[in-house]
Amino acid sequence: MSTLSLKEPHVLVISYPAQGHVNPLLQFCKRLVSKGIKTTFATTFSFSKSVHIDHNTLITFETFSDGFDDNGPDQFVPPDVYFPKLREVGPKSLCDLVQKLDGLDALIYDGFLPWALDVAKRFEIVRAVFFTQTCAVNSIYYNVNRKLLELPLSNSVVSVPGLPPLEKWETPSFVHKFELYPAICDLVLSQFTNIDQADYVFFNSFYKLEEEVVDVMAKLWRVRTVGPTLPSMYLDKRLLDDKDYIVNLLKPNHSECMNWLSNKPKRSVVYLSFGSLIQPGAKQMNEITRGLIDGGFNFLWVVKSSEEFKVPTEIVDGKSNNGLVVTWCPQLEVLAHESIGCFVTHCGFNSVLEAIGLGVPMVGMPQWSDQTTNAKYVEDVWGVGVRAKPNANGLVSRQVLDSCIREVMEGEKSIRIKKNMIRWSDLAKEAIEEGGSSDKNIDEFVEELGKRKT
Ligand code: UDP
Image (cartoon, rainbow, N blue to C red; front, side, top):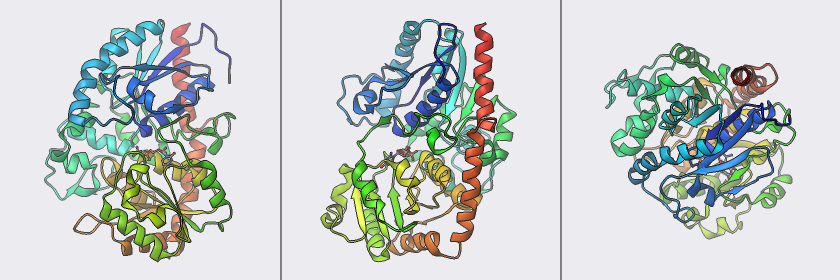
């Protein structure tokens, strides 16, 4: 890490308040710091109250208001109330922060906070948007925003330049079921209303992973892939202190998980997690429970405390012979452990990138948002897993789950999936290593900031 001086460019990075956004944006901050950029990170005051932050870093932490500063930790506000308030209060609060930080050179804002671009314009600083979801998903949203793709989707197969043909249900849920989530649909589409004015468009992805769609989008904007943003010690190992994410919404049951895994045979454990937001229904949780018990594989299952009531007590209490249920785990360490054979995931993009980076084959059980499209890529484009398809009632049955796990752990497809996984994992490392595509893109940004400063 280099030492900071007054001459060094100063960048403010702001994140939408969710674990899956804060993780990649903070990791990007670490890369900027390692390249000599003074970096301040901010998310909302209300979110910062609910998380544990490890302040042992050169990143400076600040907050801005979303209008819910007095809310208690984890207090739920419905999207149709939250987004308009954030839109109303956020810009003024961000202006105050930019003024306070005096002398900022650039604002890197989360795509979910598009109004931040106008704040950056007002201060005449470099404006860069950072997307935490794939180029493919964002390309679909862009096409809808510009009316190149009309809602409701009329054709059974959806065509978007740079993407494989998609069935309707493989597009993000905010597109194929837009009427169910009007506030969130507005939010994801609004990311593109002013994007033409951004100086840089960053993606937490890497070039080879999404080559075709990146090339299409690069004709529109200054697109730069800068991922994957996993901690360096899991990829290029250049940032010696970068072993973990530094913000945790929930406290991981670290020693319990790692001790339990330590005496399991290589590639024998199925790891299941549905991320920080998803709450599968009681019927689905029951199918998962039965699938795991009947399947007989060792399993480590993350069931958030708010969800525990949906799982039989003997499973939660660890009385089942082959499983451990925890409320949160150190996911990176778990995925990196040699005992893990497969990851049953909701296909949140951070989880997918982590599985790719650490070479763990997946069973996708997408629930909503971008997960449906990510799962399509996992199975059909990258070939690093299979999708557990829901039945007519929207449930993945115990039999389907078990047969997908079996396929990935030991079935015919498993050899090809593992081979593909090794290839993608190597490409992920190559992208972020010195001189790799993502590393070069970050260097280019840093150099441009440096030039502006002199
Ligand atoms: N995660 C974790 N421990 C867990 C479950 C998840 O640390 O027990 C982390 C995971 O490593 C990932 C993030 O939480 O970085 C979840 O992000 P993702 O995009 O996968 O899903 P989201 O929570 O946004 O739905």
